[in-house]
Length: 218
Ligand SMILES: C[S@@+](CC[C@H](N)C(=O)[O-])C[C@H]1O[C@@H](n2cnc3c(N)ncnc32)[C@H](O)[C@@H]1O
Image: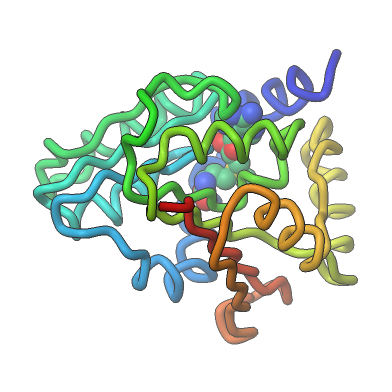
């Protein structure tokens, strides 16, 4: 099996079990700090790339009622769960939110479409990060922002990966990039780059979320 097939198979299994719920709950706390300042105008279009079960897509859809939020993931089980969870959430109508199955290297949207593209703990799984960045840049409007929020290399991140592998076989395609490598990769395609780290307080397992933001040149 190639890199992509292994990751897909692992996440298909993940989507079926309790892990789907663990992502819904476990990712919310360490990512809230930056999601709240995501620059998405009320009527903006936002892509959640590698959306998993879609908790972040729903969170953005709730604050951008006149916008359009699209969650994309290449695992069918994840998208099924995202749709189910959305239907179950009666707190919002979600007419502004849709989900679809697609690969980050082939996003089924025209050039210059989204105001923001966000990747929450998904970028490190993409087998060809350079190709993924080029494709995400293609669908962003000039001046639009890319938000990559992920776990950067650290002792605790490596320990967590080890522990996960005991419970979820096949998850060996997680590339734990260093802070510098995130910077270099994003900087190759985007301008006005900046990086920020979340607080330890929101990282129950000791992993701090690193946010890398880049802008598509006007
Ligand atoms: C760790 S999960 C994070 C999900 C979600 N963003 C969250 O924060 O809960 C990573 C997700 O990236 C998706 N993914 C990995 N590689 C992908 C690719 N090449 N194209 C699209 N989605 C991908 C996986 O299927 C998985 O749902």
